[in-house]
Each structure stands twice: as C-alpha cells, then as structure tokens.
Length: 295
Image (cartoon, rainbow, N blue to C red; front, side):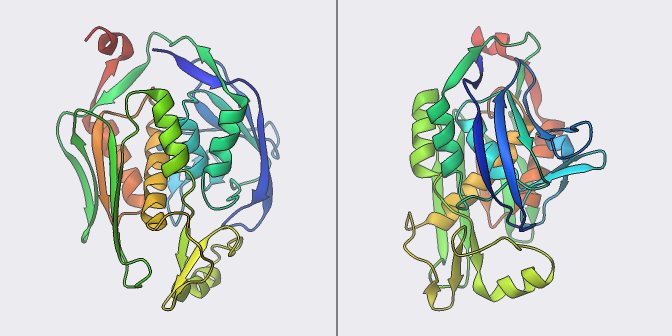
C-alpha cells in the first residue's frame, strides 16, 4: 500500500459555472501526507484551503470550501478525478474563486492525470481510513443518501424527474480493489458524464445570481420537448453525473481510500452528500492502514 502524487503538472483554464469568470488551475505534485489542497494564488500570501469536509461552507448547486475569509467553489468534479485516479497528495493552485467547469464533466481532469502519470510515495504512519460497520443515513423528504456496510465499495444513485427525457434513472458503479481497473472504469463510465440543467429552472437560477457561466457547451439542458443539445454520451448520463458529484463530495473525507461501504443515494444533493460525509466522520471508527494490511 502506498500514497501517490502527480509525476508532473497539469494546467487547465476555463469559465466557472456560477461566477462566469475565467480561471486557471495548475495542479502540482505535493509531499507525502499533505493531502489535496487548494492555493489561491490570486490573493496576497497565497492562502491554502484544504480539500476536507470540515472546510465545506456552502452546497447550493455545487460544493464550496472555505478557510477563514477565502473560498473556492465547484470543487467536486476535479476532486473526484484526483481521488479515483489515485492522486492522494496534490497542490491545486487557482487564480480565482471557482474551479472551471470545462465541458461539465471530469473527463479533461481524468485524461490529464493519466497523461502525466503518478509518482509513488510512502504512507505516513498515522494514515487511517474510516470503517463503516453500521448503516449511516441522511434524508430530506423522499430524498436520501446512506452508507451501508458492504464487502466492497460501491456507488449507486437514483434520480426521478417529471421531464420525459430524464424520467427515473438508476446506475451503480464499483471502483474495484484493483486501482488500475478502477481508474480505467471511472474514466470510461463516470468521468465523461456532464452536468445537466432543467430549462424551466434556468431563468430563475440566473436571476438568483447562479450559473452565470453555464452554456450549451458545458452543460446538458433538458426541456419538455427533450434535450436542447444532444447527443448524450450515455443513455443515462444525468444519473452517472450524480455519481460523479457524490464521489467528489465523499473525497472530502480526505482518507487514504474511500470507506468500504455501499453508498446509496436517491434524489439527493450536494447538501445531503456533505451531511453524510459529516456523519461518517462522527460515527465511523478509524483504522490504521498497517492494521488493514495485516488482516
């Protein structure tokens, strides 16, 4: 068992979904045990924001982290790619307050990570993971997300919309215990799934100061007559994107690997994802990687 960081740097520039502003992200190798963290290079003294659930301060249509007076928004797609692709330690420099949406998926991040490769690192002796030995639930109305004890890690999601083109969709994805297979399946099955919006809600969201950078180039849009910008990359692309969001939000547990559990969600949101992560921190018990290696 080992940690890993990037073998080189990654740079992407693009527009933020909510801010509508262009930012550049530069991802660099980081020291063993430093974790994944953001650096606001546009601000004096380059303040650091850790990619941890304790830093979450907003979950309206995206996940936002803050540390002191400094924040960074829409972190979930990038963090999902880093976590599943095996990048445990990364310095993420950004010259603005929002991670660029790119094409609305994690595909560009995943491809870039695969291109630069990974550098093996030793594991600090205090490294641990969360063990889930009883069900942990969070619900709001008929929406819920939970972590169930399971022999392997699995993510299952369900959505249900009145629009016929979306309707009721379910998808399940298992990263597998083989890291290389997990990276390959994530890159093929989950990372390409783009964010989506409902046409009847877009005007209201824009009037509320949200999705200023949203367009038909970086998000799927669905109306009563169907998709405005087909074709879809998968028949059930919307629910696959929800798995991407869930993976990104749970990566904020900032552990060596995802807890071994079946993460099951239905009609959930970033808010419920983060509440589940917070409950996992409260209710699970930590086990060192040395203990796991000897079991």
